[in-house]
Length: 543
Image (tube, rainbow, N blue to C red; front, side, top):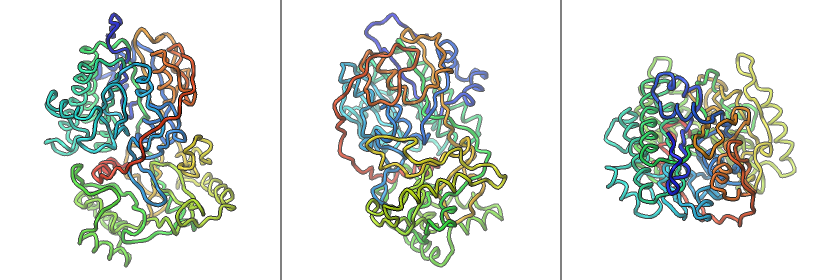
């Protein structure tokens, strides 16, 4: 399947399967849905690939393509916070060198398509079309290349909703995946890269948008397999490496609402009427192509009315509870835009709270610290005592069935280190087996039914095929992590590994030397300024 005869072709093709994992792949292998992927796994070396904490797309892919933990690259979540203000993260928030830029410095051009958190792209030898957190019709590298891609491939889209097919339709998924593969092959013919990185997001989003829908899952993975097969057939890469950023699976435990717990503890103060931090209730009716700047929503007359209702206690949480009793919660919720939901929700009042969860996909708590936050309430001298008390108490929290809610509640230093440690949550909360949904909601009980029946798991997959890999080596026993992918890529190209990387080369390649690289100089941090991106993430349940 992999041709090793060419000297001038693509030396390495990396295929990214967002949320790819054995429990999802095995039934698809057995059914014959994904024969190309199955061949890579069965003829090459394969094994589990452990994600980081938090195992969420926006932070995990930067960790994978930089080889560094969030404390070194700076992205912990889909959101970035400046005091109590927030914005959706983009490539300017990634403060570490992507592996394709490192390869470029050593004379190796790359083509990168659809990798998350790569908009706006940096300068390097090659071409890049950004993935998730980019707007539709994003800036690409080199400028103008997206127009060429659309002409050559009959179109392109970052998100399925931008097409003529119905929202969340199988046809929309398949068309988006088809564009992805065609664009990658077109750019590879044009650039003739040494390194290619083609990522597929729908292998994750189908589980959030159509949870447990076997027909949709098979259609998505079948479409991905066809594009991988066409890419290998046409480009004949010498080596193929398949990676995922995390796994996915069912959530059989309850939902634990951390901020509600913290409110009962006396740490969180909530407000009504859209005046505090949004509770990130999942939105139902948003168009990716519409919306104002992220975080800068003007209130409509309906929002003003819902704000007023919330101030007198008629919150969306109370309305939802009443609707649920008569079986109307979901049908009505699907017709209420996200901003309307937020306008009438109870929300965390950050400045008035002592400890709170800012965002559920951050998987941690922030202390409202004096001289650090704009209106810090906790004196610096009390920081460690407050943090230790929260850690001790949360560690003992049990579900209604008496099971631990968390596998670990730890100081941030346990999981992160680097110049951007200060941006991390002060306390990291790791749910038990990722089988409990931890959310930032307030206004309901401490426990409840999970809003999403599927969510991320920590274990993904890696598979490697080609002459550069020692396929006899066992990856299952090596305990590889996503931090090991970038050093492995460097080793395959005999490029010195950045000594600041946190991973090591997988045992299937001969590791190259380490080197100290000059400090990375990323672009100044820029606002995403696109509420359509925020709405897309909220549609998927991340916000």
